[in-house]
Length: 264
Image (cartoon, rainbow, N blue to C red; front, side, top):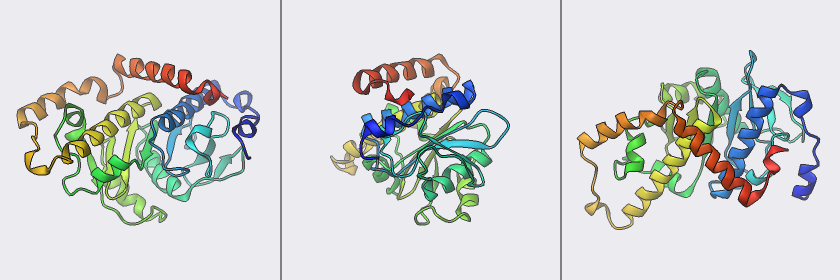
């Protein structure tokens, strides 16, 4: 497996999965490659996952060892919430930390079809601040009233952390893992990615604003925070037309920059 050409020679799984699963695979692979395009990756670490449509508690996640721009619809790993590998085309297995975090959320939150987690510089920097996400920008206000936090316990390898993780997340889909990174969930891959896109941008703006010194930072007034909380419902539930518009534009951007390899 020394080149992308070798990776892309992996036989397509399209003919042996349902059309519904294939559609989710393509979208999740696109999300991985978009994250690579936006430089949200941490080499072979961090994870995006999506629930497989159907009655079984299966989800798709990246094969451990692949870079995000190497992820395709056919090389995603299918695993159940108990950690049993159902389908692993490259026989690479999965990252244990990815399993601990994603299986916990998929088991506890059937309303979330996709869960995306990053270790970006600015996301991790905000996660390390006592105040967390601050109401400094219009971007931040879309998440400020919804964000929940989970205190750092070390690398997420222990199953007993799962209970505390989902308790801290509650019914939110915007989650900051302190001293660690960002996590968003959605009713679809498109929804989760829209949430992550905005949250990452909010963190970028916060770190840039703080570079000028915290003494001069202007927090939005309480009235504006509440107003934007109400206004942001247009995209926060994942059902508005803006989610599709945003996703379609992202796919055009990805295909111009990187082609169609995610669909393999």
